[in-house]
Length: 350
Ligand code: KG4
Ligand code: ZN
Image (cartoon, rainbow, N blue to C red; front, side, top):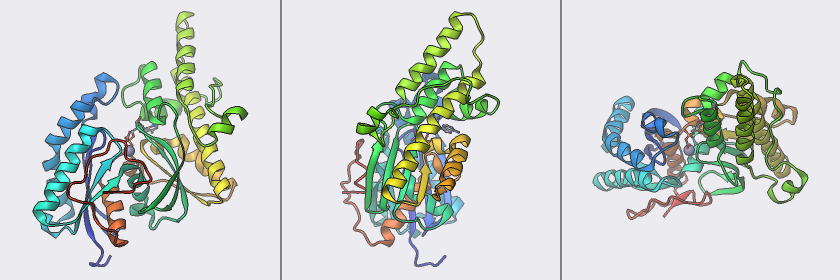
């Protein structure tokens, strides 16, 4: 680590995690997080108004905690980065307002960055410089995208995305059907370990020959979710117990099979040898194992950040901010908006 590497503070508030990360270059110094997930649990999904208020309450204490952990004072920071989109509008606004206030009062440059690009950039904190080009599979409660990353600071092209539910959303909805708590992904992952992944043959969305013509690299999980619901209802109607572990394992196998199959097809098509998997669902143990196994058979390398860096956090925003500062790209204006539908092609927002 050299001292001419930028010291960057990153703020993330796109969903239910208030994250403040501090990096020096690509060395992680602090990753403070306050989550409002417990406040949403009884609704079975994130309630935007509740998330916004929680961000407001958590912002200052989380910034203080990050500075304390990193052993830096705010005036030492070289730049402020913030998620300006995509995400929940009200939640994003809190982070953007906080970042603007810090940047203006400290007289430091402000960088409004894309949340999806930050999910890709975070891997540099753990595994070093990104191989470019690489293919990124981002799977979380809010997104399921396949991206061609030519340059994480300026050139990201979408190859495919979900046409209905995000992968994490499917995990959460199926968990709810099975009586498991929210968020459901980790519970399905755990249940699946004692179940059989071939017990039930659930559908693989958008993999038929006809679908592949139009949606080769897109995903669809709503049909799978409905198939699980019908299967569970039929069991209940016939008075038989629902084999939760088998349903969890078979559902998880169907999701992972499609995610991995389409990612490797995209990598092969583009001649790309590195696949990066990020977002909350990248914490799934079966997804990690299946991707490793099938990719190595094709000579493709897989990089997955550790679970704490896969879910939403401030370090990922700081990591992307740091790459942008190092490339010498111009900062955003102090009138930077929060943009709930910021396209992934806009890595750095105006
Ligand atoms: O990236 P993230 O923290 O927030 C969003 O941007 O959505 O992802 C949260 C999602 C939830 O849907 C959660 O159920 C899922 O990631 N998730 C998992 C696992 N851990 C978290 N899904 C499957 N297996 C897991 N182990
Ligand atoms: Zn995310």
